[in-house]
Image 1: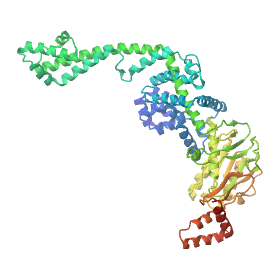
Image 2: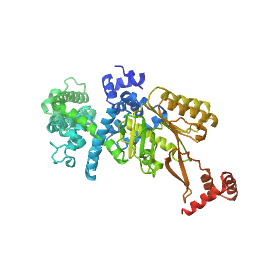
Image 3: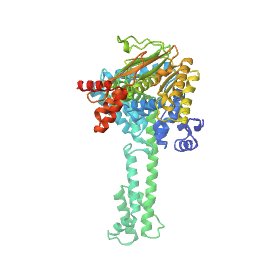
Image 4: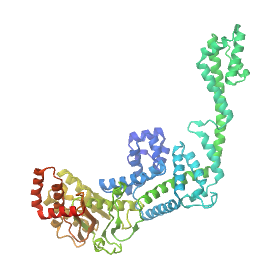
Length: 596
């Protein structure tokens, strides 16, 4: 096939890949998602990653219907890649894409769960040993050699094997290594250690090493012809014959070449002594190089024979080590953030109990878990009416205080949907994910013009009208057009979402202007509760269902009053306090002081 048939491979990229790799190897690298090979051919890592994502999961990538949805996806794979145990595993994580087949999602979840169980059962010392082995893996320069030596090192790591022998015992994700013939691996490892891209390495064969050393010495002597000439003459030789014999003895002593070989290489037609020395040394070096090349061919054939004899074991080791590293990397990611296997359900819905935003979690923020749902679900009641999302509402209009976590909740829902579609565990105590063909996530953008409005509508409307099952997550649509028009357009989007039997969460401050909502839509609210002793806003991030959240300007004005730099500034803020309710402001300040 033509390289340009792959997404993102234009004429210049195709020419570079063909020149550096050849068409067949380039196609193989793309189809096997081998980022490292493309990078070694001169393709930037970012571009290589994009090409491989499309080549190996284009349909899944199309499910990420907006730039913001794709940004969430990229942040997730980037975060997961930080837990990779090898560079190749990191590359494999980065090119993971959403899947379109639920069986494939379940199979990947099974693999990650098995690897996580293996990792959980290892003590800290054993984990350190495994990470050190994979770190050594990355330091090697040959793919097959690195895999074979890593496979042997893992087999020798007694903590991974129940009987400590590593011959028949199998332990979780490492089990495939037990089925590989150890003898063949050891023979192949020895051969691969001495076979490099430039031929046979030093140490593979003593005779070859001697021939190479002689050739190198002869080449050095030829470069230093006049020094050799001066050294031989310093022996006090007289006449041509005596000079030639002294030269023979000198060369033989310096290079360990037999004197007879030196005599056979002597030039009979040299113009002068310097020409004689130079020509003889060049001829002798060429002869030794030829013998070294012949010996290298024989040694290389023997080494490749050892590799060929263990080809099945080598191939199995390459595949096993790559898969082990990949699944362990995902297992470490899942363990680090206490991710949970999502439940795939047949009814339309997305529901999470005690979900956490991974971006905040990764930044070390103190994250309040949130329970939320749209569509049908079977998430059991929590015992708290405020945290029991109704079942059946396809659309939710989310309202509430500024800095109340509404956008964060949208992003969290997007994270859950994307991770589940990739066959990865999610940041929630429990999650139900219904069939979903596309994810539309639109963050609030602080641009206010016709171009932005048109671009936004072109981004969010086509996916929901395509007839697929769509999740709509739209944040403060009113930020990009006039409030009156925004309410009308947003109501239209809510109605369209319901009519297309999609799921949606729409964040807005215009809830009152959207009434009446369709029957299968509801309004939820997030509430601020005041200021703490540091005058930071206290927010209950858990939405209250079927309740309109209220913006709380009195809290913000209270903080401004308390933080005023001087009396005139404070007087200005006091004017605003009277506008929003001076008693509420004073009560907020009193509560904050009491909370100290």
